[in-house]
Length: 115
Image (cartoon, rainbow, N blue to C red):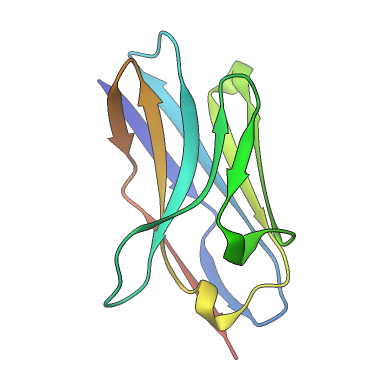
């Protein structure tokens, strides 16, 4: 089993910045990718950013140029640096890990951007 622990969420004003972290532990033997999803109230969960084992990244169009995903492979940790935050970035951010066909989720961390 794999455990994901997120941190770094909070309340920030529009235009501000936050950095999310997600540390993976447990039965880790070959991570295929790690990433972040978010879910706003009344909306479906959506992909925000993802980074593959090879370092390839992809982002939702709405966050390109503002969010940056990175990782520390030695620590099995992924980060999401968010700048120029907007009220529409508000939601619960979930860490996601894929390993040998199995997906794992963190418990989520709340990000609230006030206008």
